Amino acid sequence: MWVMVAIFGLNTIGNLFAESMLEKLVFTPVTAALAVLSLRLAIEKK
Image (cartoon, rainbow, N blue to C red; front, side, top):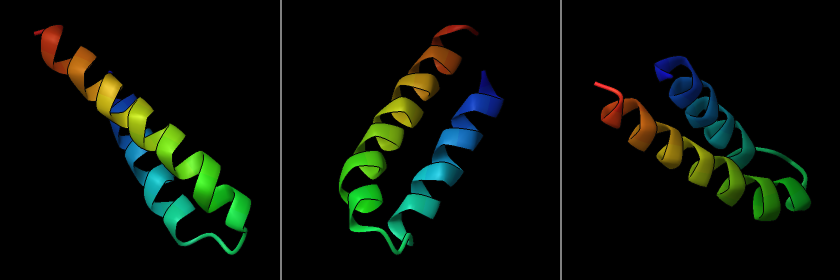
């Protein structure tokens, strides 16, 4: 599960620096939410 947190976190950072405005406005919040939810699941699995 920690791998998913890292992937979504890095994807969020990449989306912040994207040239496409659609990618910044749509996919940045989506991947950020997925990163936070994955983090929550990873912490609860302990």
